[in-house]
Structure formats: C-alpha cells, structure tokens
Image (cartoon, rainbow, N blue to C red; front, top):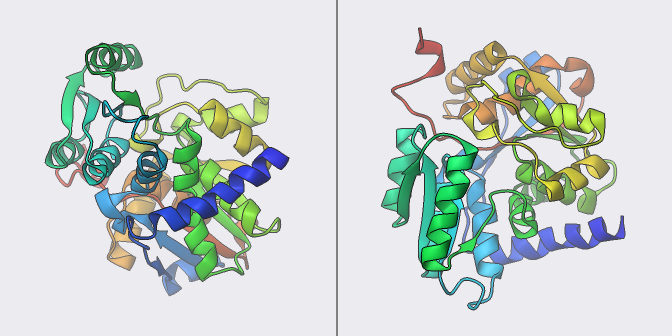
Length: 319
C-alpha cells in the first residue's frame, strides 16, 4: 500500500508537469443523462484533448519526465491508433524522432494523423507477433527507446491526470467510471482517486466481447485477451502487469456491456450532447446506463476517453 501511496503522488507531479502541454479538458453535464441514469453525471471530455484522446497525457508525461540520455535515439511503440498519435505528437514537442508500428487494419483516420504529427510509420500484419517482431527490427536499426502504451508507470500517472483534474473540479464525486483495455487509464484513474479520497469508488468499463480484464480481476491473475471481437478498438489489449497490480488493489469492480449497448449509447451521446465520442468512450457511458443499482442517486464522473472515429464506418450504419 505504501508503494501505491508513493505512485499516487506521482500523478500530482505529472499534473504539474503537463499543465502547459495538455488541454485541461472541460467537464460537461447533461440533464438527459442525469434523468435516464437517475444519477448526477460529470463527463470529463478527453475527446477534446490533443490528438483526440487521453493517451496524449501519458505520452507527454513519459517523454517529458525522461532524461535526454533515455531518449537520445528517439522512441518507438506499436499501436493501433491513439497511443501512436499521442506519442508522435509528444515526440514532436520534445524534439525527438518517433517510430510507430501500426497494424494494417488500423483506422485510416488514426494512421493519417500519426503521419501528420511527423512520426515514421511502419505497417505490419494485424497480430501481436508481427507488431513485436517489426518493432524489434526497428529498435535494432535505430536504438529507439520503447514507450509501452500502458504497462509503464509514467504512462499510468500521466493518464491519471484526467481524473486528477476531474476531482479538482468536482471533489464531491462518489465514483468514477473509466474504460479498460490495457489498463493505463483505469489504473491512473484509481491512483488519482486514491490520492484524493478513499471514499471515491472507481469502476472499469469493458465490452463483454473483450472482457479479459473483468475475468482477470475475478480470477486474481491476468487472463490474456483471446481474439476479442468488439467495435471498441481501443479496448482490445490484455492488461499490463503494473496496471493489474494497481487495479487489484484500488478498483471496485469491472462492469461489462454488450456491443449493442455500446452502439446505442454512442449514438444517443452524439445526439444529446453534440459531442463525438468513440466506441471505447461509449463503453464507459453504457456502464453508467446499464448498471443503475451501482450509480443511482450518486455523483458519477465518467472519463470520456476519446473521440477518434472513422466517419465512413459509423457502427449504426454497418450492414
């Protein structure tokens, strides 16, 4: 627990470091969502963050906390999208080279953005073995430093600054919901809540078609993601070791929702708030709506994790 206390304090340090680098994103409310959830909702809009997702926080913290020596040969990661964009822009701001390995099925909007931020992009087959072998080849050529998208304490603490800001603006929250894939955002959110007050309960949100985090928490050990099939492309990865250790200690539970619930929630959120959110973010809102007994009459913060959507492939328009 002492280690968690020390790590939670690093979220505060990260928040100070990132003040001039990231957007302090708005928190919006909605009488419609208050009514249908029978709770008081506070949406932390990381879809309005630079690169359109919370991932920019972690990437910036990782690079600006690093010494010149640590990253003198540039940085590298394999990512399907949001981490790729975040690391590319953070590297540009730090003045170093970024190498990004992206699977060939990455959303076009994310692929284009990574190139626009000045990164060197290498495509590979859409499987973990190809991603890792391609990354290894580039490391051998360049000496670039790996920046893991979630299993990295600097990344975790950077992601936690979204909840840190949310709690600074609304310290009276009873609970926070954050989506979970690799666990960087959920672990960081839990650390921020732990630092703020032991009374704030943190819940993870996950597609039932990619429920490895929920199963891992129940089993007490990491159960790898096995061929997940969900429109929430940001929630496909298995939990990281560092992330899981924090989640085990500090997260109240991980709640799952169906694909249809994610699609319906994403659509109604667009319609009612006029804000674009991606399926991964809609997963957290869907948990709010589908577990009323957990959140009724509570003040609930929801991390809207991102808004990067391929407008040519909206889920409610698919055959």
